[in-house]
Image 1 (cartoon, helix red, strand yellow):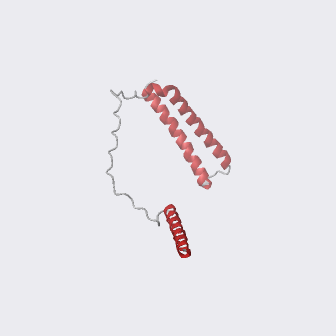
Image 2 (image 1 turned 90 degrees about the vertical axis):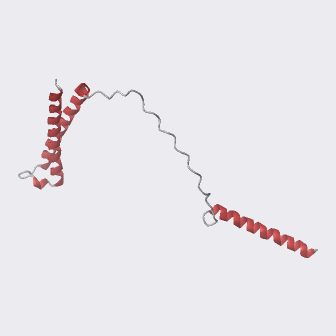
Image 3 (image 1 turned 135 degrees about the vertical axis):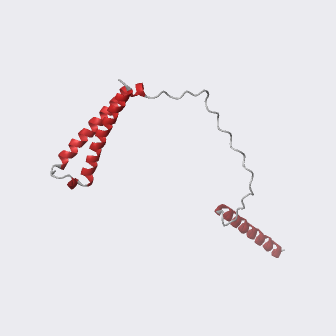
Length: 130
C-alpha cells in the first residue's frame, strides 16, 4: 500500500464522516430544513450509522497502517540543557503590618493594653493602702 493511497482512503472516510455529522447537526438544529422528511428519528439513526462506520474504519486503518506511513521522529543529538536557575530577586523593603491589616496583631495589642491597665490599677490600689 502506498502512502498516497493510504492518505486518500483516510481523507475519503473523514469526508463521509463529516458529511454525516453535518446532516445530524442540521437535523438536530432545524429538522424542518430537510424537505419531504417526516421520519426524523429514522434519518438521525441512518446518519449516525454512517458517521460511526466511517469513523471506525478510519481509526482501524490508522491503528494498523498509520505507523507505517508516519514520518520518523526527529533524532536529536543531545537532550536539551536544563533551564537556567531563576535569578535571585533583590530584597525589597519589608512590608509594614498595621493593626488594621492583621486581626491577630490587633488582638495582641488589645490584650497588652488590658494587661497594662490591670497592672496599673493594682499598683495604684497598693499605693493607696500604704
